[in-house]
Image (cartoon, rainbow, N blue to C red; front, top):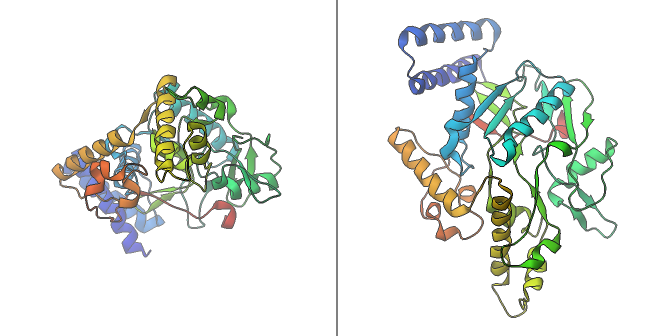
Length: 364
């Protein structure tokens, strides 16, 4: 991006920041001039905390794949831009995990580490989510655990990690500073709240030995605000039930639990074309029930869809365009029974935003 474009992106953000925060011109105009001069002389600029905070919240509001954006103003921001040392990052991640879990009352939270420079990322967190379960390739080609994390598990094993070899081994944390070797840290077991899955009416369900963790903390996306990239900026909301029930545990390419559940339910899969649907409903019922019983915040897909429609209405009232990726916004179960299914959403790129990055081990 050329310098003029960089300046424009920064100033566009500051204009939006001033408008939304109702900052008067006596404060706003000098700040714009200051940032423009800073970019001209150094090639970049340093957001103040309140600018970083609002930019992170705007990024959540703009992210086209997230159905939970109604709560974007509640995002808490931890400003750790001075940190790039892996040991310090690791300690901060443990603190993030504890604060976000909040005893089950999940708190939307982002921790922002050192920004990228002209040389690239200052620090990267290798994990896709801060928490995840290992996937081990077996001799017969099958996967024990979560197939989604197969590549990451291989990298962890190559760095000397050894898991217990179960279906639900929490993965270690891998953090890398630019120019240095990646550093492996133990799985944060002491800080992780995991929920064993039971069912309100099917006593045998607990015998399946299923569980999941309380907080989904995305840790491999970059936060972009005003032409500045923050490649290590882990953030979280709370789970929508179908993310766990329909995708993590239900997908054939993941834990593939539907055939097992259908068999336990006594469903004849040969003659019942809806056996997957019946098993899927009970799996999702177990997830919602278990989290609620454990006192862990979660939302069902019907409520999440209604909340998204409220978010869209509020954005329209504020004069802002709602960008949404239909394939992500529509829940992976009972899609047409939710209001988001029946809308045509425009998928536009809007900044600030949380953007994907290549796997750190592939190039960093």
